[in-house]
Image 1 (cartoon, rainbow, N blue to C red):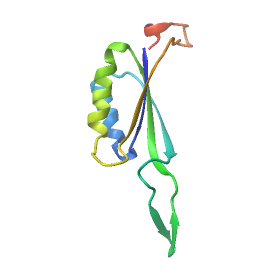
Image 2: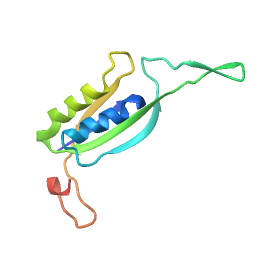
Image 3: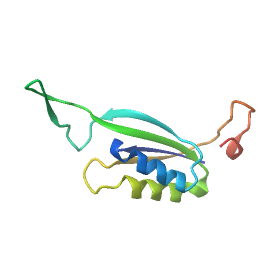
Length: 112
């Protein structure tokens, strides 16, 4: 099994969720996150005073899938999250040694 974590532009969230649904991802977790990368934060004005926003808002999507779905899920995220500009995000893939369903103690792929 694999855990895929994708940090994407928040504006691309709905597109990515739709693409993941289309390739059969049954569930996911997401969080609103902030970070610093090669894309610099913008300066904004509030009541005539300029200030640096500092951190860039993004969305973190986490899914755990069977090994056979890895390529399809990665393609779905790449295609839906792509703008071609700095700040499109990152994808991290990790091996998952085991997963359990709390409700009935199912184990492994059966628990997904």
